[in-house]
Length: 252
Ligand code: ADP
Image (cartoon, rainbow, N blue to C red; front, side, top):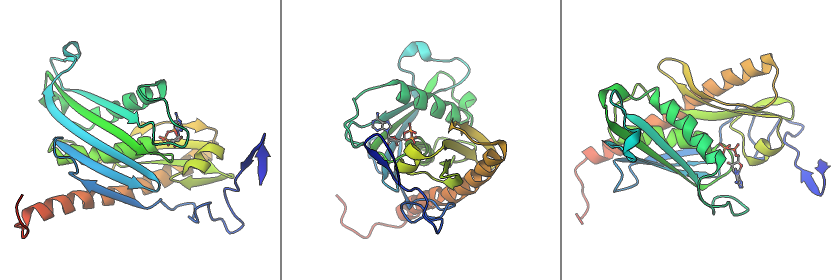
């Protein structure tokens, strides 16, 4: 254990190579995805991932607001990522800050590259991501939720996009950082993958890694994304197989 000022730095890896929550370096936190959780949205999904709880709601293609953003040749993809003030330990100031603007922009761009935007000129595809509980990796949880919500809305896209943050923790490359690892680790690298093409559509990095570590991190991240992809597909299968079974209950 070390310390910075009055704050103790937790030991991020123990002598057996286990992380603070008992995971190995290549383990994901438990992930649960439920599709179609909101009645008013065209598509929606709730992701519970470790201690993160993130909701995505999707609307469109629909009229563009504000109108001047309308494009004659394609749909605009507008993502709004928002972190609820009750989602973190110290109350977060409500509203759009620079961090949420940046995250909204990178997520909009990621989805623009997989949605068939040219098919829907003069419209908007609106993606709302609400972080209800945060514990690092929320932009990735948002991408995972929004992918499922877009599919739930029936909006055609090349593929679902799984996403995960890889990082460097106590000198080792680790999958899916939690808060303490994000805070006290050496690097954090969120990424989103299009499994069908192997293309990365979101890649950011905070901290430092060597070239070799970066290659190792990308490889681990891709493998993590492929596991998440299975959970996304399962969430959609569950949603639609349940709907196709005639209801045995009492109708409202
Ligand atoms: P991500 O959530 O995608 O990992 P960051 O790396 O910016 O994004 O944030 C890491 C974590 O730090 C968040 O998941 C959240 O737990 C916490 N955090 C971020 N912004 C704030 C804030 N304004 N106030 C308190 N905690 C925050």
